[in-house]
Image (tube, rainbow, N blue to C red; front, side, top):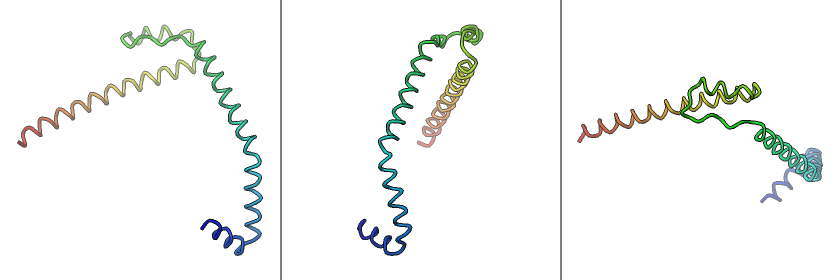
Length: 116
């Protein structure tokens, strides 16, 4: 079926077929270089992550107050501080979402018991 489609494509527009075939061959020939480039990028990313992990202090315990967290971030760069603040905001949002879901579940169970 694929060969039939290729044959029809070749018969309908031979110039476009040749152009596409040429592009495909070039793409296949450059596959090794693309894979090497991709692997190099992953290696650099792993090195950067390792370097960051070695430089960054452990985050404060969950039970600590926000003033304690701000004091422990003094040695971190601004980007890390910003990321930590965003993470803390997400944790707060997760907590409020979870409590809303619990309230909804409680309402559903009450209404279900009334139906019976």
